[in-house]
Image 1 (cartoon, helix red, strand yellow):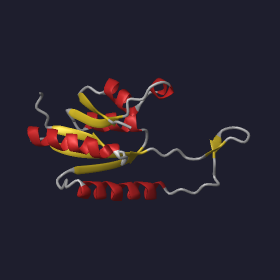
Image 2: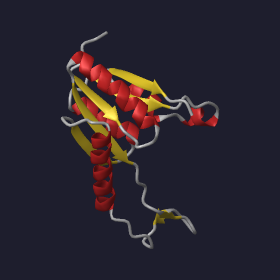
Image 3: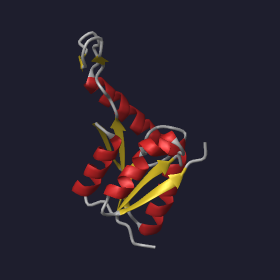
Length: 147
């Protein structure tokens, strides 16, 4: 096994996140590695397509509030899983892009995330884990999640 020093864990707050964080904590402990958690708020502004696609002005969503709520959820997640000394990052964007961007910019040598092992249309459309796997210059551990 490689010696990992800087591990990035993608957290989506699903039930699968429990399996992911358990695996990540064990790997970090065995390698004396630093853990960083990232949560990506995948927010698409509402689009009005009555005549042609345009951003809808009838919805009023505060993106800062979405980020703040996600930060609170990430803090709670860390407390529940007894992770005290970890960096936490919340960003708005596309999970695949934001996870890859963060890992590259912060010299992460392992990315850990859940994989639902989708088939059919779900596989055809692609998954975040698959997208990250093919974009990263470092190792990626996709923890298999049983649904």
